[in-house]
Amino acid sequence: MTDAAVVFDRVSKAFGPVRAVDEVSFAFPPGALVTLLGPSGCGKTTTLRLVAGLELPTGGRITIEGRDVTGLAAAERRIAMVFQSYALFPHLDVLENVAYGLLVSGARKQSAEADALAMLKTLGLEGLGRRLPAELSGGQQQRVAVARALVLRPRVLLFDEPLSNLDARLRRRVREDIRDLQKRLGLSVVYVTHDQQEALAVSDLVCVMRAGRIAQMGTPTELYDDPADAFVADFMGEANVLEGAVLGAGRVALGGVELATAMRDHPPGPAQLAVRPELVTLAPEGEGLPGRVRRAAFLGQTREYEVDTAAGTLFVVTPAASRAFAIGDPVACRFQRVIPLRPAADA
Image 1: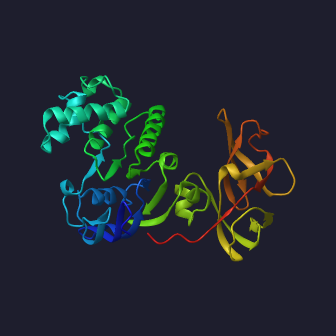
Image 2 (image 1 turned 60 degrees about the vertical axis):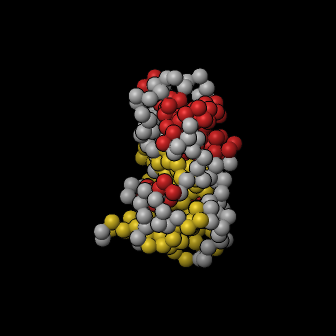
Image 3 (image 1 turned 45 degrees about the vertical axis):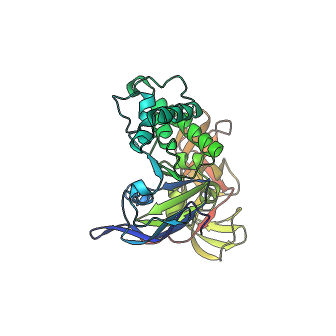
């Protein structure tokens, strides 16, 4: 696939007996932001380092924009990486930090500083060139790190947990900045995070990894609405995963009760059924899966419940304006949509 930004063809990386990446294959389209998502130890950071050339594979083939880079060192790939720690030089000012890579590559000082100033302007950092990193906010430091990477005009830009050092409000703002910049400049970006909300917010495609392999890859909407298995369903946001049965089109059995619900086509028979918490409706009585409220919490915009049922304990999220229930109240649980799952692959 010569028009892809990054292609892995059965790529593996072993550290002694441990296969951190196990015959992974994918093709990331150009101009897209693709997120590698998964729990600690799933192989996402090793995959990113394989793209960067900071690790070399023990098997398979890697191409970037149609060029075989499998055996090339990082400096030969025209890849730039923004690290979790930003890695800014504390004794250099902002302009010097951004121009550093150009100067090391042999550019003249005047040319390097002109390019660095232009990049600072692009990222909204104009006028901050003579400040030291310690004189900047966390969000400004992050943008300096991005400017230093972009000024090298990389084929692909890599982010390794770029927002983990920021507080929640600043994380939201900076991830919006990164997404806006990526779309405005048409950058090909590979982005690593363990934060599901972050992945949903910034990505064109999400690649969920488990035990060195790809569990599922798709758009954020596809992975949230149609997870392949229980692992992906549970990792891509909250999910109630219940043992039940598919009875036919729009009919399932849970806890000994037959229920009508929206669902994708699935063969009749026993199945794991995932239900998102916001797609459970609670009523004081009537048709539905009977339950009793174990826990109730008011969170401002929403209410959260744990409801004991014959199918298991459900986590439910309802709008704050909906009817409130107290601990011990009997309720009928209705499901707007359920997701039949295939069994998760063995780790």
